[in-house]
Length: 148
Image (cartoon, one colour):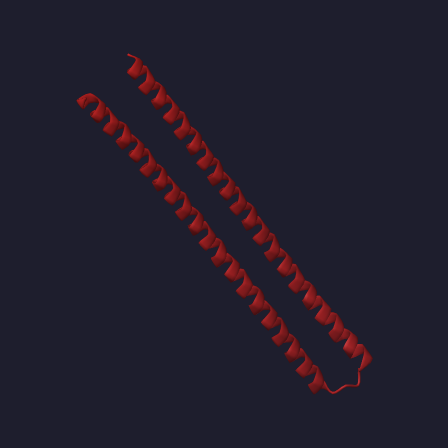
């Protein structure tokens, strides 16, 4: 009876420990999910700011172009065309850089989610292994105790 009470107490302690570990793991996962959400929001905000910056760059280029026309109204039309071509190529290059960065961020975010998922699954499998080892040790000691 004393052995049964002691075994029951040990089982209860193991169960409480397992429950506490599982709650800690769930808290970790929730924290990681929250961080991923905040990261995604920050990326979206960054993308909006980049688009706003590109818009301001366009306005600035248009302003400089009009300023240039006011100052040098007698300039040759060919120079205006070359300037316009350069501006277009510049904005195209800016757009490509921005698109490349956005794509890179999306890929990185995707891989971050995959890594988080894999880590969570790995931790769950480690917990299962630990639980099975504890069950095996308990069964082993029970069999050893029953045989004596």
